[in-house]
Amino acid sequence: MQNQKKKIFVINGGQIFGHSGGRFNKTVFEATKEFFSNHEGFEIRATDINKPYTPEQEVEHFVWADTIIYHTPIWWFQLPHGLKKYIDEVFTAGYRKGIYYSDGRKADNPKINYGTGGTMHGRNYLLTTSWNAPKTAFTLPGEFFNQKSVDEGALFGFHRMNAFTGLTPLESLHFHDVEKNADINKDLQRYQQHLEKLFLTTKPDEPVQLGESIR
Image (cartoon, rainbow, N blue to C red; front, side, top):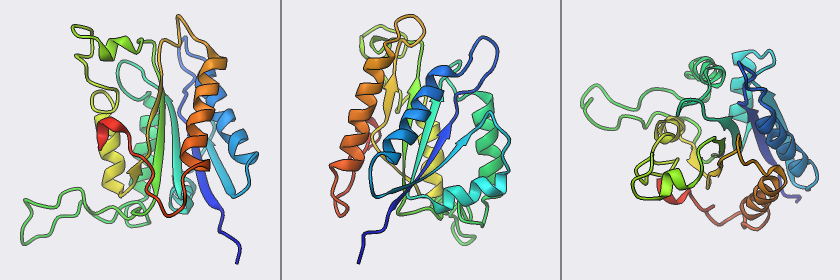
């Protein structure tokens, strides 16, 4: 019996807006599709939020996938409004259609079990983000982010959103200082190594490593 192919759904949240052309995240998005296309054992679907989509079809992509890969820049310490709109529309359309069934609470004791009504258990997601901020802004004492990592700080709500659906996080990857000191070749090499570690060296029966700061 042949092994079933792993189903990968890739989302480009690199929005074209104002002075941003979305080129960095578009490049990473294309590199992701190329990576999985060049290795056996994977099926790929992809959405670019800059192109027309229907929420119902996007729900079907989420429900179909074993792994969802989000690529997004960070604007003013949050998701771009186009990606946030996409998530609002798609997750709302996914209510009782495969993304979540309820908030998990029961009428007899509504104080507990909030956030346990997701229906995507057994699946996972990978997040990449791009920042103007250098990595040291998150790690050095006295710097802007008070030594809180991307995952436990600015993106904490994003991770809880995915937990609400039942998804489990894979180890995130963050690209820093991409406006003033970008090294796209080095970044893509590091990203490819990250994908190889997560998807080519992990045995199917072993748990995949979670992001260090969100365990």
